Length: 140
Image (cartoon, rainbow, N blue to C red; front, side, top):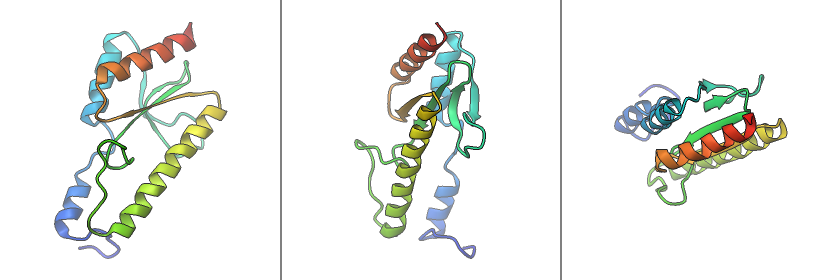
């Protein structure tokens, strides 16, 4: 394994490298529903200049930022399973992800954005309705 890798085994490293950072199945399903409703959006775009974070779906005019969070990475209360190997590393990683999510929400809300967070396991239709309502409310 490469120097500096934190993976416990080559198989774990291969698995982690295979995880998508964007265009996941839940994101694509949500975007498809939003597009069918006539909404147009930006994908994987930073809502605020200088903020090194990207929303999965972004409505700049309406100032609505949508994040579809993975159950594993963002510690879903329903589906997250703690790591059994390299526990300390993963505990720190998950805590940092949660801290960053909270900071992102706070920063965007202070800038006047509506932040919508959805879990990957949520029904895309329900998430789409939340997004559609927020966008239409913002744009009149």
